[in-house]
Length: 109
Image (tube, rainbow, N blue to C red; front, top):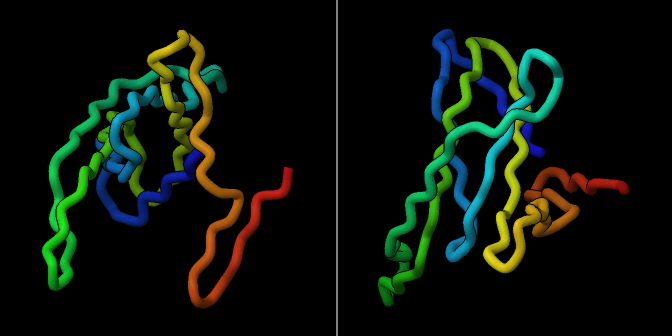
């Protein structure tokens, strides 16, 4: 699940996330009945170039999700990896920790 904050004074209608390549995704938002509702999303993949001496290239993908976030508001989005081998969707879990040079946050199950 992703919490999206819109600090601006205008409505945001499109969300953009960097995602791993070679996977397909489904996106959901919470509707007025407090249930998850699937929303349209598009995956855009391209060859990107690293900003290094060798100018290495790699596959990069961005997931665009059509979901409205009102001005000065929060929205909750659920993104799942839709496995090609089965019809079930599995949540994206890369790490239980978010960290930078100032703080370390760990998800406790």
